[in-house]
Length: 174
Image 1 (tube, rainbow, N blue to C red):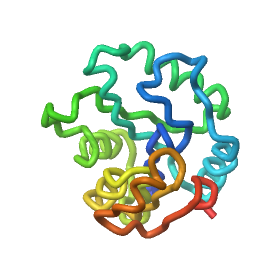
Image 2 (image 1 turned 180 degrees about the horizontal axis):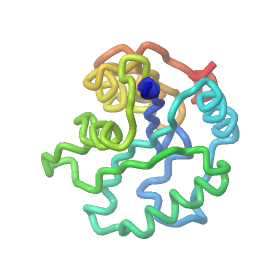
Image 3 (image 1 turned 45 degrees about the horizontal axis):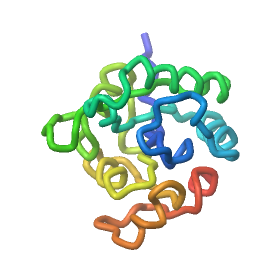
Image 4 (image 1 turned 135 degrees about the vertical axis):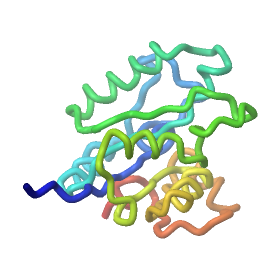
């Protein structure tokens, strides 16, 4: 019996990459998906990528919002994006907690690899911060940094050069 080959994945940061950056987003009313997000994510999906969101959510650890509020944001994103995202992984911890899931550590990617058969060598990490690029490099994926969100500010001080530097997610996908 033949098993399916591992799938390539697009690990995508949430805030500033898929949606507008809102400091500690906790209300659906404040959710703004970038106009080109659906086209970009559909292009990845059509090219055979799993769509996996990996997001640091320290607002949970800070007590600003709870997991239920974050999950409602993710449900609304799925509704607006025709359920195209395969999975969401999040780190609720504070930067000082020293956890293994907060980017640039690989806990979220490792969790995804337990749930999906992923070909890391042909996968991508896409985000708007240096830690997203660093996460991809740590995982052995290709990397892309977008200029939306914190991208423009972070691109001036790159610690590690991404494979692709693009205006937004759609430009990175193209």
